[in-house]
Amino acid sequence: MILVRINKDRYKYDIHSLVKAFYPKEDVSVVTDEEYENKEIDEKLISFRIEIDFSEDAGKITMKIIRKDGTICEASVVCDNETGGSDSSTNGTKSSLSTPKNALKQMMYRELTKEIGHELPWGSLTGIRPTRIPMQMLEAGKDVSDIKKYMKETFFVSDEKTNLAYNIAIREKAILDDINYKDGYSIYLGIPFCPTTCLYCSFTSFPIVTWAKKVDSYLSCLEKEIDYVSEAFKGKTVNSVYVGGGTPTTLSPDQMRRLITYLRDRVDLSSCREFTVESGRPDSITRDKLRAMKECGVDRISVNPQTMSDETLKRIGRQHTVSQFIEAYNTAREEGFDNINMDIILGLPGETEKDVEHTMSEIEKLHPDDLTVHSLSVKRGSRLAEHIRNNGFFVAGDTGSMMKIAGEGAERMGLSPYYLYRQKNISGNLENTGYACEGKAGIYNILMMEEVQSIVAIGAGTVTKRVYGDGRIERCDNVKDVTLYMNSIDEMIERKKKLFA
Ligand code: SF4
Image (cartoon, rainbow, N blue to C red; front, side, top):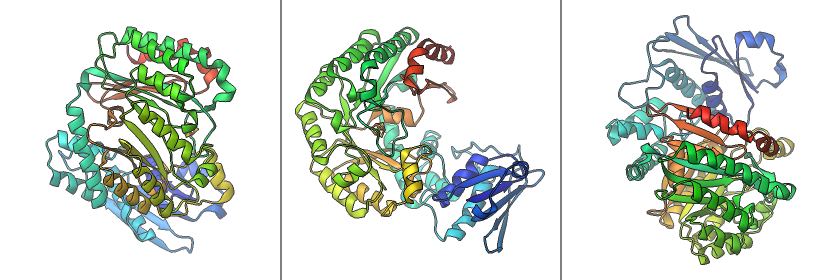
């Protein structure tokens, strides 16, 4: 464990994320002096300590790294006082180099880089939406050199990641400029059932075999929420609909028809630019379901191999084979789907660069319209986290090299990066990137990731987001437990009513 002690209760989250980015395999605990005094800590578990001291007027921050062998490295930085700088100034209209948060993160980044002996690809950026910085700067009229300078000087982002973030921001902006998103909203429908639970799952997901008899009652609850949406958002434009989960294709063809028809009958989707149904698990896809979706106007689906290795699929509990995936994909093409996304995951247990090369060469033969490349994220509470605890951390290859192999493969297929996000505890401290061919970029993904419009989310475990005109965001969530969701459906609707009042 790495123990970080701070003398004032501030920036705990940022400090934790940054230390964790340098030491992903270590537990990191950030405590105030007061918390330290009241906390029982097993000293034997501590690998090394960091002490951070904010001077009284916060005009100076000092940092000490106390190594296991007792040697100490000390550094300090001068910054604005507590009220002298805005930590949220990222549009480049004023320098934010010396705000307390940035000054602290820069100092920590410099010192920890020396400790581990190399830089991090995303520098000191630990947030999940790094493209928002170039995006905001583009909107503020900044040019490419301003943006690159800012990313490098403020956050130490590598040239490669700066170029990636900038190019994606340019593409996203072009797509958003073509959508009247400011007056619209998007709808998310959550189907929290899956054929089985994948080892790495951290989503709201329950085995369909256990829930099969209650799916119709669950759909009735979604319909109640749809009734609320149709009333509350009357006259507003729906830009995109996304049915996710879970695995929506655990629904039968009739249940799929019932849900989508109900939505179409009550909500005006005439201006909807994209209707996606995640059909992630090939073992849930049948021709009849694909037909039902096509008839109902679904124009984008996702069929996800994750890897093209049967051995890995078995290891991660997917319970489908590569050939089942290829069959599901080909059936979707036969049924007329001309916008199909595939998800793959890098850093899966036991996989090396060779496996990723193999996965990419197999995918290239299929020519998907979209490819989303995820770096494995090990979330607390997932079975994967437990698996890692029990078996030791084993990502057999270098995720950075895997990311390069996947990016080159996407380029060979004519797919360009169009959206990007990062997660906590992501393998290699990298990112998830969506690639798409011209005209096939997932609009919902951009609207959701850039947080430029409200997303009304329906179903158990979903989160509704209200985006105000000034960029302020408020959220309300639906409970994850399906039974509780169904029993408290009126309360779920009340929460939305309050949020959009
Ligand atoms: S398909 Fe997705 S939601 Fe379902 S268990 Fe696997 S990771 Fe979780």
